Length: 257
Image (cartoon, rainbow, N blue to C red; front, side, top):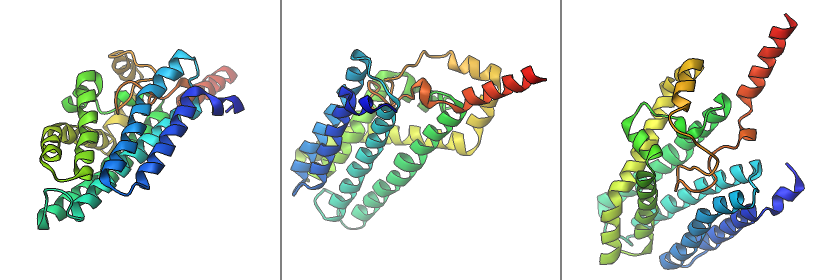
């Protein structure tokens, strides 16, 4: 990493996202949290454009964006669960406990385990993360159709914020409207995790011919994302190093023989 990358405009925008999330966490009420959280989310929509427009894509920016995305989503789910348990939503009693449990389970299962597994395997195999889990129709819809991707990711944010803000009729309406997209996103990411746990992805990408066929389905570039489809969550070539090094070492052994 070069020192100048710290001062890339896109990375500075990401520093702003961190600051906005800090203020959100320090907020005294749900409305203020939602305001600062929304600022961070809007900045997330423009950092990729800035990186590409200024030719300032970097490995630092890739990892920075990816980590902030996960922290942001975990915070949204955590504070939504806390709001439910505090009795600030339409859920009460046992129902509130169940909803809070599901939200916290999604932090672990989707935001941490599923996303981390996908990104780790994509780095190890040198495969774009948007190619993971394509055996499932729901994943193909989720990742290859920008309308579904935008709808599901926006629904995720709105569902969480509707629980955090208050239990008024507007918040309840937003929650109900965003629930299908929220469930769709969670199901798609769980399917991606299943593909990894059952070793479907590992088996598929160990076949060079099959890997080339799958990779040819869609031309992906840095700036494609599993959050909004328009920013910097796609691994740059420099971040995917295992396959390249492996190929180089194999070639060297072949030449020596």
